[in-house]
Length: 320
Image (cartoon, rainbow, N blue to C red; front, side):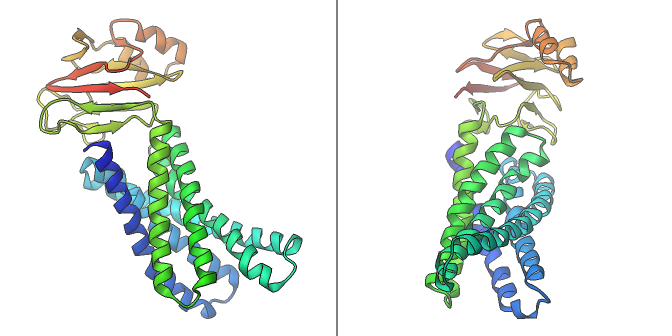
């Protein structure tokens, strides 16, 4: 899929997350008086909403790759991390509310119309940060995690402001809350997509074959390419692709190519598998790995519009 289609699907997932989280929110809100304390209500509502939104967003990587198992694993990670983030964010929101109410709010009206919506919006921003970072945490990718966290904060804050001020303006209108939840999910998806591209190392575009035009964002320091389901880029529908064929490693902001199997070319120059690829997998130091990169087993740094041939697939590197 192209980057545009990827962002479209991500936006649809965001809208879906809002649609699914809304009924849970209405149920918990309706049962608020049945909770033993405000703390219990805050924890349950925050964890539940965060878990639902996190599970939907966490499934994105597997959906993009068409891998059901990876989508399920990502959803489980998203559920857990999003739930923790939701509970944490809502607690932080309550703490900020107490601080603002004590220091700045002079009347009950000030609390209701300013302090309460603002503090809760901060809680939504924290929830968004956890939800956005969940997939990066699962993949142990600092770049993806940072992009997700920043995008989640921005989207969560924007959506949270709409939700909370919607409560002030239309307190008895549940469908206004539904629209606000949809907006929340969409803005988290939107800001994540924008920040992810901004913080990425570039992208790879397939030039031929059954998935010609498909684009892959390089948003982690180590990208594996092959036919195996555990690879970051799966090329199982192409000929001559090993289970794990090549790896791209980031070093000092540059990408280096390591071959693990034959039939790898960079701009028609052969890249042979050997000790350098093995050394990269063993996690040697940056200096040692870059010495390997200059040898026959690895090459780099990749430049704009370099073409990597892997079996029958060809990938165009598009740098920032």
